Image (cartoon, rainbow, N blue to C red):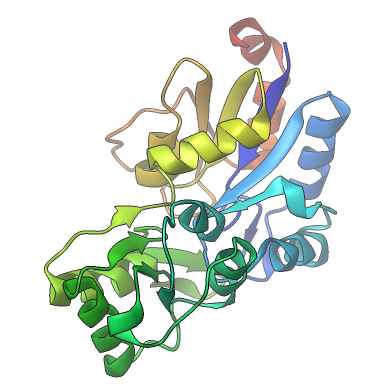
Length: 258
């Protein structure tokens, strides 16, 4: 049976500009064993080409754009009508325009609003996005991660940006990123048939995504979740890092369940 490994990126393959030791070798072992390999990130800021470039530059693994699934791609797939007003970065801009939708900065013209990580956030940007939502635009949130890990600690994530718009508009948006059903369906379509193993460092996104008969999960402790942290959702396996996770998956225990 064909198997797919889906890896989170920040906190699993690399931390900011530092690779997780042994990550590239582990990924190559997965491919050599005949598994499909995909990368799913809630970071909406970068387009797939930029994510693939960073994988090669930082982690030493050369990925194709088709292997990269971002919350921005899933958010764009949820748009039903334009124009679209964005409070987000280039990853969302590219995903929405490639999906064929016009962009606008005029709240009264927007049929859809997408909010993601926005490191240029300002009072005016929050005001325009929330004004459009109050006027009836459909609100899509790329992901609800309150923070994301970097090599200099945790930074505010898209969830923090979205909270400002949702609070001002009084409406909770549709979530695109992990652990949403929309992200799960998107990954399943990209993976094709067979079992899917999710490797991640966040219980509330990565591990919570892996539900259903096709899915299994591995929690690693190189990112957000600590070794001794109490877990609300239990993964199928726990590992210190990605190389340890791959070693477990390619061994007899994983084979017997997949």
